[in-house]
Image 1 (tube, helix red, strand yellow):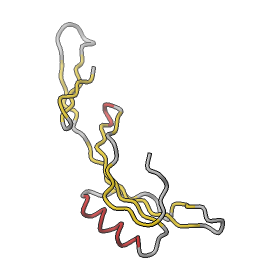
Image 2 (image 1 turned 135 degrees about the vertical axis):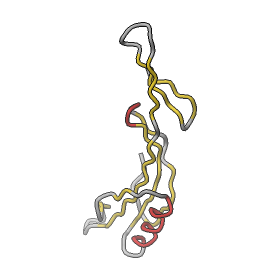
Image 3 (image 1 turned 45 degrees about the vertical axis):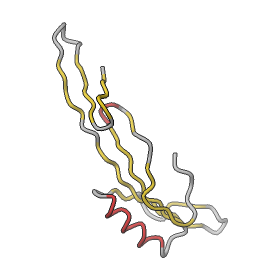
Image 4 (image 1 turned 120 degrees about the horizontal axis):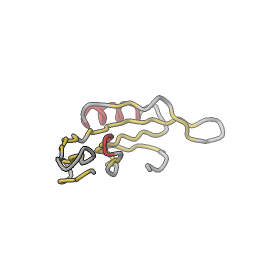
Length: 104
């Protein structure tokens, strides 16, 4: 069973081994990504590079601004991920420039 204590705290409660309960803290992981896009001859947007993951929003924003000079579109976003719980929070856009596909 997964118990959410708030936006930053989640625990997993293991009751499978009898009446005693074992709690394990699950730390949220922050996913910070920059994606850049180019246009091909038919006008379609395609990834210019593989998505890039960063440690801080500031680093991601700095890279996105740099790529915006040469790419048709750039998007930097962050979301709290909890892989152990199988879920992700909604994305927050840090920087957007040019044409980008809609973020899911």
